[in-house]
Image 1 (cartoon, rainbow, N blue to C red):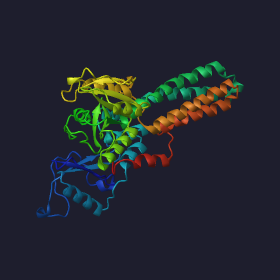
Image 2 (cartoon, helix red, strand yellow; image 1 turned 90 degrees about the vertical axis):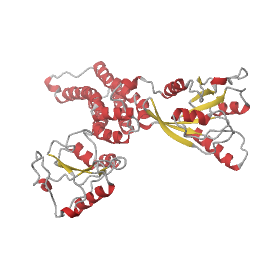
Image 3 (tube, rainbow, N blue to C red; image 1 turned 120 degrees about the vertical axis):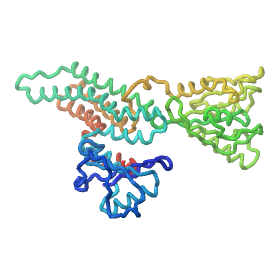
Image 4 (tube, rainbow, N blue to C red; image 1 turned 90 degrees about the horizontal axis):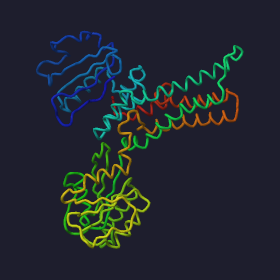
Length: 439
């Protein structure tokens, strides 16, 4: 089995190729301590195009716990592709997407939450995302789930014993104790479920649209937040005719900033198209910055725009605070307000902090490990909570304990599915198919 090329950004010194996981192919290479390179293969010295480093990982001391070889060559795509072609010609095959990580899971080296964290780590866009993925890879979610699951298993065992050994005078728990133990499982599960709002934000990021009438400083504010002259800025109203986007990290959360065309009555067809796109960006955004020009009185267009975002998560940005006008009055609004100067940078740090406050980015979850970032996990936790709730209803209804056990088992199964203790092949194939080839 041959993994994909692991290439650096551009041509570098060495690049790695995760190679065969094939004990028979390695039968003649069982001396990993050998330090002196030896020539291999049929090629003569004149045909040699590179010298490589071959590293042998004897099982179980490898990523997959199988015998694995890694070939490190100089970072030329041509050389690396040639290595793959040579390996394929000699009987190797390309790994399926996620196959190395699936092998690590099937061989018991990692559980399913850790396997999914590998993909999250690869796809991370910010350092904080990478740290969260690394915590998950280290088993933080599994460790948080383990004591919860253990309490549920103990409750199930007690009820099973009371049913199976009733003739041996094994006491059956009274309803009050059953309810207390269900609550002891449900409360931390519900807390874990609540962490998904923040976890989803960390995992997926958010889209922030900067809107306003022409020439209020939207593009200047965009550039200030991006910390680069990404958007064209002129004194002529209506300079921005199309959407300009850039992704930045705020508090470790990837934020896609969208600079939009000024919203007003269009003066020509091109501007009309730009304004329509602005309205679409506003509708799609998770958070909206409405920019006002505080160096002059507010206009009717400002009021119409505020009415448009009345039901949206919005921050009112009073730009040009370095030359604020005594005639400027903030339109009546309950929106949070921040005064900034895109020209001088005044108030930008306060604006960043307010953005995080509005989206929940300063929640206690930031100091917490093992929170939910994965939609699959969140759905399974909700399923487990639903099973517990059904068990509570059954206890209050004084139904036989055999029926209560059915609900408790329905609460246990989703927890097993999170870590992969009981996961069907279709789900496994779906999860690992989303990995890059060969990881």
